[in-house]
Image 1 (cartoon, rainbow, N blue to C red):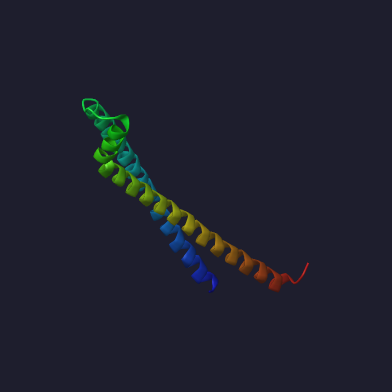
Image 2: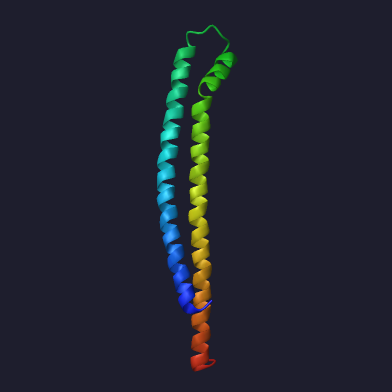
Length: 117
């Protein structure tokens, strides 16, 4: 890889980082909304179950069942947010590796120009 190719790759990775950060923002909002909906649905289920003649454990199971779809959506949204965060971290690591390569190239060129110090 020559310097021009490395700079082009750095530019490409920079754009991927920007896109990954935007995706992280979007998935963070989606996760927050899903968490809100899950908590709201679970609270409503608890209110509804007060009128039911059940033991506490049965009510808890009933509430879990009633809110399971919202919990699933929340869990998926959390997973997507985590995946987006990992994409950001991965792109940063790739860019860091490329920067290390460029720094090594720079040091090698300087050594070739000036010799050992």
